[in-house]
Image 1 (cartoon, rainbow, N blue to C red):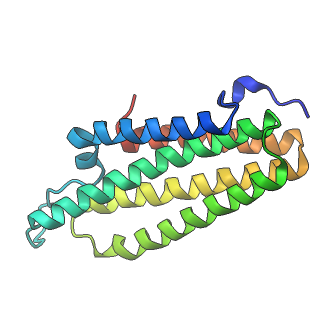
Image 2: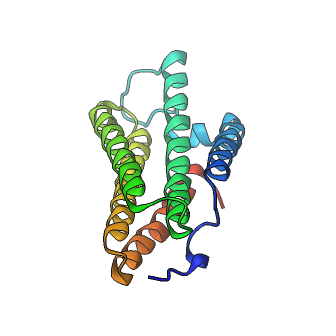
Image 3: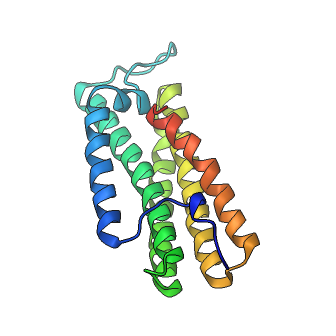
Length: 180
């Protein structure tokens, strides 16, 4: 099947993929050091009687937000880069399927861990932010699963399903990270 290259990221080699991930991580750390970490897991409490948050807890929330945001962004880029490598015939289907299975499992584990702490969070905004991250991890899982399915079938329908999820997940990541 001839997949339009304009609908997938333009990465052609593994080294370019790794460089993009490293650059995005460095950029993410620079951005979050001043703004996004506080947005992902605000340290203010709601008006209900919640116990005061210690400095350590605030730092943990900010760090968790930073890592979560970086993971969402990097995973999105990784899936797209692997898709490009498949379309460009750098990766074979079995390699893509193996990589997507790993991404699926990592996202499942992270969702599970976040679901454990979500009910224990006192601030409504912390719960809301955590829920948004969990839902976005689920969409990244679906994107990885759909890419894997596309490599099995090479049908237009499976490609379009992957493309639709890829298109839907990006605005959610932008919102979580405060990107425009």
